[in-house]
Length: 222
Ligand SMILES: Nc1ncnc2c1ncn2[C@@H]1O[C@H](COP(=O)(O)OP(=O)(O)O)[C@@H](O)[C@H]1O
Ligand SMILES: Cc1cn([C@H]2C[C@H](O)[C@@H](COP(=O)(O)OP(=O)(O)O)O2)c(=O)[nH]c1=O
Image (tube, rainbow, N blue to C red; front, top):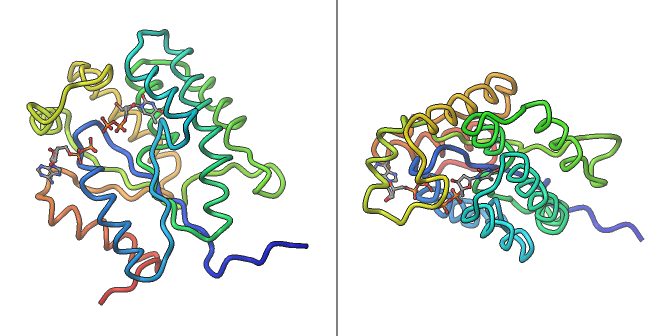
């Protein structure tokens, strides 16, 4: 028997930006806004989101390794996450809010580490081609919210805020290259991106974020 189609089509939203850009600050608020309008929300993150992927996250954030190893591990985590959490949630009609997805790999491994973008593109094809999409469709977020901020402002926010992991401990030049990596992804797929000026006060960032979601007809204004 065919499963009953979900009442709402699933929505896949990813959140991107360098460490300290303000993603975590706003994701929970957006989840509450969707829930208040009757949507089921799956809140998740990368690397991580499943028991296996969370183990890989611990390794990626703490152990030294070469950029290919790093890329393979984040994509391995992504494959497990996509098949066991994201695709089932989208099939149920959930709003999936994901703290980072593949753009982070292009920005951090591709931009920051300078790793081969062609290899990343191949891995993206392998990992994000899922049986849920007919033909050879590639699963991509319906919307990617990019919290754009300079490394200097982000670093000032993070100073004292938390103990840095292997990425957060990188110098400003690394984060400049990460920002370039995000900019290149936005340029290649502008229809999927909403770029926010993340240097604004929290309230202004929040209202810009809401405006993008409302504009797409995914949330109603009160
Ligand atoms: N618009 C803002 N202005 C000033 N500080 C902010 C703003 N947004 C978030 N912060 C603070 O900056 C730090 C990093 O924010 P966070 O949401 O954890 O960033 P991310 O998840 O992108 O790494 C936190 O201490 C947070 O309270
Ligand atoms: C998803 C992903 C994250 N990362 C990095 C970026 C972040 O520095 C780190 C973890 O992301 P994040 O969850 O934002 O860290 P935190 O919980 O400290 O806010 O992993 C990559 O290098 N490649 C990837 O593909």
